Length: 186
Image (tube, rainbow, N blue to C red; front, side, top):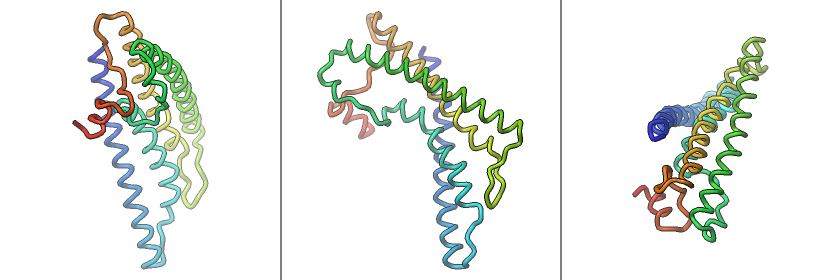
């Protein structure tokens, strides 16, 4: 289990680095486009489409699994303060199982759409004809990686219900010392 989590964490680091590159490119292209527009009256023809069709999709989906792994996602945990650790683990098991199934479906549909668009040579009309498959390809990559992470957490939480020591930690309760320490990077 620990080896699989390390493998997924390594893939998340690579995906996170690619998401950071996408964010940098968004910033650089947007700043360059503004400079070209207002200084030379010649904006980049590709900027809006490239950012919205590729870079934003890449940024979102490539950062998805890493955000879950570091508890940086939006979570409704108002009831966690009133639950026992066992009940919290049962809830985490259910949430991870349902979420894994949902993101597996998203990854499968995204892969099918990307393959169909690639085979058909679909293009998105604009100032430049952009290949449609390249935009959709980030969906199965990011959703698939999150599905792997959620499946491992599902199995880890499920087995931890019956193990003498937990195989996977519960996320910290909001407002707890542990949660504050994690936020501060300690």
